[in-house]
Length: 151
Image (cartoon, rainbow, N blue to C red; front, side):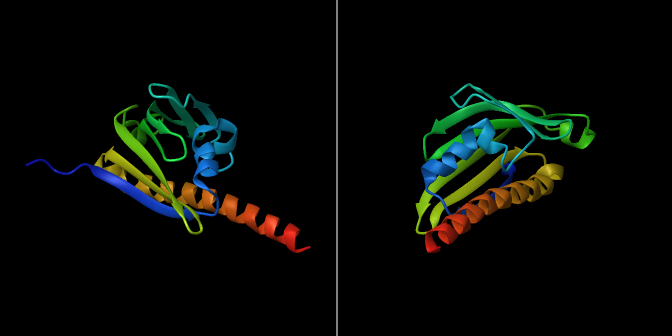
């Protein structure tokens, strides 16, 4: 019997509809607001996924699923000078992001599978950090819109 694949999983609620959140997962300019410093995104099955997450640490793979407003999935691995990260070769793990309507906006569930045991915690921690930035981006927008409406 083989071991189950190691995974990092995070779930957040975002104060925006799934279609809006979806755009922040496939549009390079919008993704830059919450994740990474350089982006090459071709959001179609087989299209390129490349994000320079931090200086010199580039996550790369290909899109495996793109379902508007519902799901984005892509392979993932590192082109990096960091020996620990570079052990996860490009395309060797998979990130799946599912979006569901929620009474407060969108429930986003991210699952990253195929991680080496020694990289599970850092990926879970970093995905949590970046998803919190995405949540905050919309919380700020909603607060500004609410203030404008109230004035």
